[in-house]
Length: 127
Image 1 (cartoon, one colour):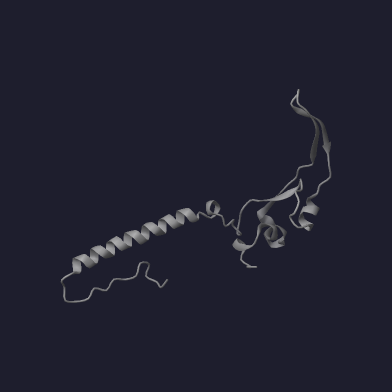
Image 2 (cartoon, helix red, strand yellow):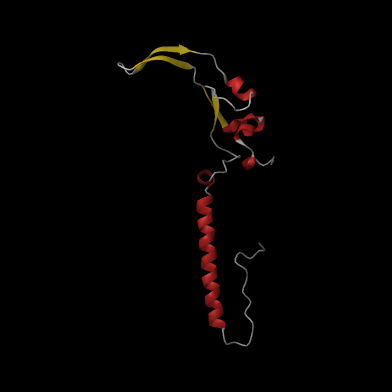
């Protein structure tokens, strides 16, 4: 498994003490029972103990009422919407297509000359 924050699964990052400040604890200590369809509400509301310790000690195979919620920080979510990948991809594409058009224009203007035209790479560095 990769040791970079972006590629570690969420359940691994939750349990890492170094990333604890990036998570908020959400408590839900209420259990609602006996739904009444006529009143459209629960008739019994009970207070139950916190199960956050079970959430952190066991693998994420079952749902617990108290859990950690990711609020952001250094180990950013790698999905397209959180990382902004779509917008970066579009900007790079525009840059690439613009450079290709400029390069075609430079080469078209140079045709017929006796000397070679040195065209720099797109970003000035090796891919």
